[in-house]
Image (cartoon, rainbow, N blue to C red; front, side, top):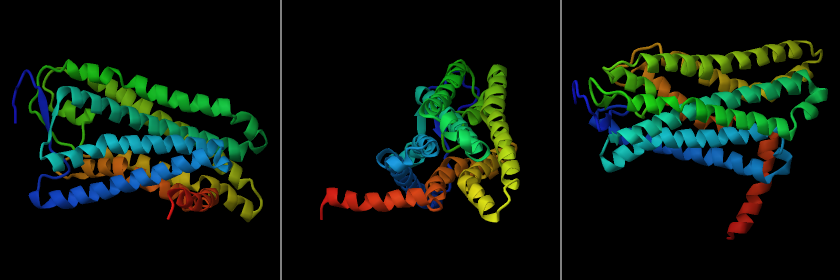
Length: 312
C-alpha cells in the first residue's frame, strides 16, 4: 500500500475476494460465465448475420447488443482471469485509464442500445402500420451509430482527468476491474471536476436519460396493449417485448442497488457490479433465444449446415 504518494506508476486490483481459499472457485466460476457469455452472444450474432429471416430492426439491435456484451465481458472479466493465471494483480496507469475508458464507454453503449430497442418495440406495437417505414435500414443504422459514437465520445474526458490526479491515499483499488468510482475513492487531490463529470455523464446522461426514454416507450406500449380487445392479441404484443423488458429490469435494478451502498470486501456494491457486468450479459442470449421462435428456428436450420461444413 502507498499512502500520500504523489506519483503512482501502478495500481493493485484487489479483485472479488482476497481469501486464498476462494481464488480457485472464483476463477472457475468467472471462466465458465465468460465462456458462456462469449458462446451465447457469438451464436446470436452469427445467426443474425447468416439468416435473412432475422434481418429485421429488432435483431439488428440484438446483434449490436451481443457485440457490446462480448466486449464488456472481455474488458472486465479478463482482469480476474489474468490475475489468477499470472498471480500478478497490478496494473499500470495507462492500462488503468484505457480500461476505465472502455468500461465506461461499453456500459453507456449498452444502455443506449437497449433504449433504441425500446423505441423499436414502441413503433412495432403502437405504430404497426408505419413500422417498415419508420424503422428502415437507414434509421436503424443511424440509431446504432449514434449509440456507439456517443458512448465512445462522452467518456474521453475521464482518462485525461485521471492522468491529472497527482496524489493517491493508496494504490489499492477495491474492485475486480478498473472503474472510475473506486479510483476517485483513493484520490487525495482535487477531483471535483471528475466528480461533477461522473454525476452529469455517468448518472444523468448514461443512466437516468436512457431509463426515462425507455420508460416513456413502455408507458405508450402498455397503453397500446391495454387497448387491444382480444386476450391473444395482448399476449402476443406483450410477448414481443418481454425479453427486452426482463433485461431492462435486471440491468437497471442492479445499477440502482450498486452505487448508493458502501462496499467492504465482497460487499453489496461489488456483488451488484459483478452481476451487471457478468451475469446480465450471460443471460441475454438465453432471454432472447429460448423464448423466441425465430431465433430457435434459425438455430435449428443452421446447426445441420454447420455440421456438414465441419465434416464427421
